[in-house]
Amino acid sequence: MFLLLAALVQVTPSERVSAAVEAGIRDGAYPGAVVVIGTADTVLFARGFGHFTWAADAPVPVPESTLVDLASLTKVIATTTAVMRLVDDRLLELDRAVQDYLPAFRGTGKEAVTVRHLLEHRSGLRAFLPLHELTSTAEEARARVMAEPLRWAPGGRVVYSDLNAMLLGWIVEVAAGQPLDRFVRERVFQPLAMEHTRFLPPRAWRSRMLPVGRWRGTPIAGEVHDQNAARLGGVSGHAGLYSTGSDLARFAQMILGGGTTGGVTLVRTETVRMFTAPGAGNRALGWELRDTTTTDNTGTLLTPGTFGHTGFTGTSLWIDPVRGLFVILLTNRVYAPRSGRSISRLKEVRGAVADAAVAFHAACRAASGC
Image 1 (cartoon, rainbow, N blue to C red):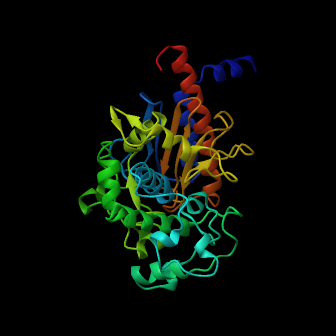
Image 2: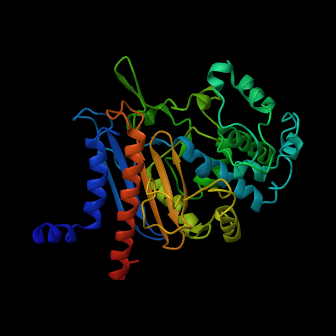
Image 3: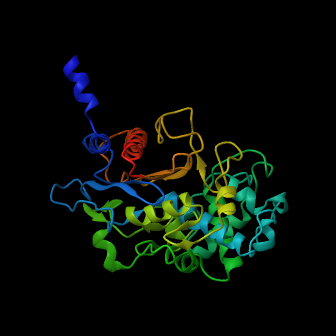
């Protein structure tokens, strides 16, 4: 027993991260992963694990250049940040009616829905519509969302909804006067030197993308996994963005820096605080708050003020403003999982990695390195 306890004490934070992620691979939850852990000015850990596919000779993911379909992380990295920039530029008002920006958003009670309601997921809209089945074109899909009736009164019940983020993406386009993908590329990603982050990545990048599916046994990469985003042309406020671990680290450092990193100020500190402050339920504005009632996704050691988001493909970003710490885990869970509970297993891995990240941070501070 003494030898066992001594061995456990000697396990380093790096070994804890590696053990957690590699266990998820062994359990069949995902074939490949990237982990990046850091503070506002330091990357403490950055490593790839496993392979692009289950094949032993497939490439190993790397934080700097492996691209991942972010799925719902799109909501915060692209859409929410675009809203933040437009609020700072006084081109968008959170408490104005959605109809002021999108006149086609009509129906009983919908005149009361505001931009803030969309960010809080309190619009009264249902969670999901299978637009890829209900419509044949991007135009039809957009019209279907605009016509969707409210299920609850605006400003009340919190229901996490892809429709809210779709509408926010279209509002950004109206307020900015340009397409969502162009606006975030020019006003968010380029200033932060996020060179590998974009919607509709070029074909030349496909060899560096984690596959998210197979067609007749062949891995498929570069085709957005979310079918509604695909119906909308690959660019949507709710999904469709691709990025790397290193690019997301720069983004997280900007948030931890109160809107500034590397001498570049993207948004005002007051705006970052407003958007990440606790709101209704477990929501901030666009962001999700840590659920302290479970160890899933965020473990036990991140502070209650932690915020972030997850994505269906197997992605997550958590930011602890009290500790000044971020944790990124990117996987391709949707690629032929060998586990019948891949999402549950991934949530456990996220929690273990988050706890190891806190240990990293503690060791760094003890060594006066951060």
